[in-house]
Image (cartoon, rainbow, N blue to C red; front, top):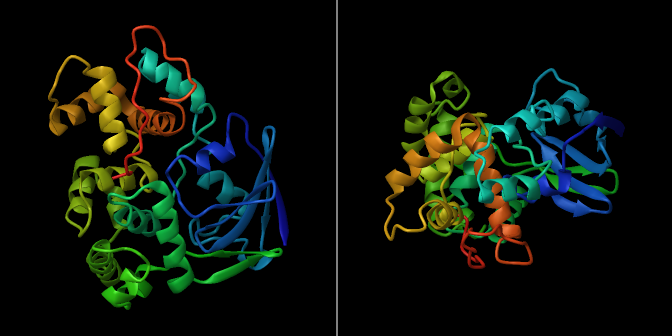
Length: 310
C-alpha cells in the first residue's frame, strides 16, 4: 500500500464529497473510502493536508493515464482550481455571499466521463440518499471489488459491462424506468456511436446537444455532466432545489418564471464560473437554508426543502 501526502489549502474534503457531485464515497474512520477511476483510495484530511492510501497495484488510474497517485488525487479533487479567484467572481448579493461563506473549501470534482454520465442518468427524480443506493448496487453487481487495507471499494462498471446486461438486471438495482435509459446509453457509448472522449473538443452548445440526444439525458443532466465530467465551469444545472432558490431569491415578485428565463438569467448573472456558484447555492440550500442559519435582512427565507435532486 502506498501512502500519499498532498498539500490541500482552501479545501474541505468532507463538504466536497457530501455536496451532491459524487455518490459512492463512504465514511470510514477519520476519512473516506472510494475509487478514482479503477483505483481504490482511502483519504482523510488534517488541516491543509490530505493523507491518502492507495493500493500499490492500482497506483496508476485509468482516470488520468500516466499519472501517479499524487497527481491523480490532486487532479480529481481539482486542487489546482484557483478557488479564491473563482469565489471572488461570484455576484455580490446576500444569498450568494451566504452560500459562498457556508461552502468555503468546496471544489468541483473532475469525474470520469462515463461514470458521471451514467450516475446522473440514474439520478432523475431521486434524492441523494437514493442515488447513493443505486450507485452502490450497480458497483456491487457489475463493478469490481478492490481492497484498500482492510476495507473494500467497488469500481464503477464500464459502459460495455452495462451494455451486456438486461433491463431487468438493471431494474434489480432499483433504477426503475431509468434502467432502459441507462442500458440504451451504455450501448451507444460502448459501440463508439457516442464518443464521450472525442466530445471533449466540442464547444459548449454542441456538447450539450450531443449529451441531450442520449436516452435519459435532459438539460439538467447534460449540464451536470458538462460541469462535473467536462469541466465546463459555466454550465449551470437547474434542478428543483436551484429552481426554487432562483425563483424565491432572484424573482421574488414574479409568480411565474419560465425555465428558459431561469437559464438565460443564470448564464448572464453568474458568469464564467456559474457552475461553482450553482454548486454552492445547491449545497447551501440542502444543508443550511431553513435551519439555524441567519438570513440577511431583506432576503426571503427559503422553506425547508425535501425535494429530489432531479
